[in-house]
Length: 128
Ligand SMILES: [Mg+2]
Image 1: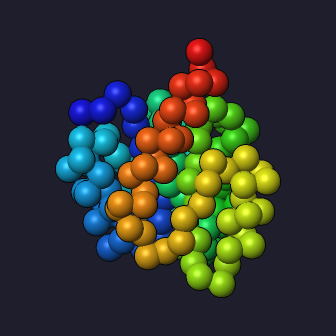
Image 2: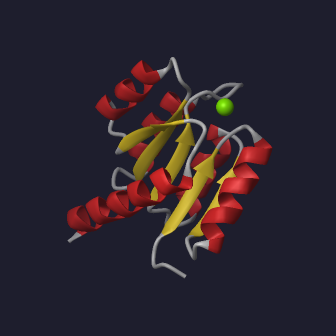
Image 3: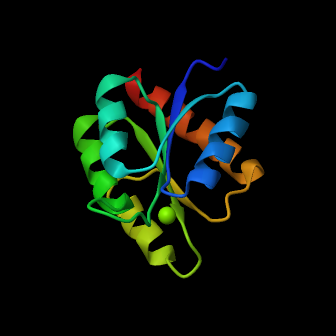
């Protein structure tokens, strides 16, 4: 296992499960939750290094609001946003709120894996 942990937050359960399984298979310790509220609970309880966060989620908290709260709880936690085509502005807005980066759905592992590695590097640089 790698020495960092990832949390995936996405309301689409199939996508979530697939992504979590794939990352775990790549030896990345990965948790998955389907809402912003659950994500905050995990952030408070576990040492999460990188959050992969869907922007568009139903209910009380969308991705942007979840991002704000994550950064309040753990400012060093790096967040990669998942955004749909036609919602790129939201990804850019997220970066102004402290997101590390955003990627477009559908998620391609060959795009996501290097971004996770970069996010971990950035976090390590800030911790030292
Ligand atoms: Mg969604």
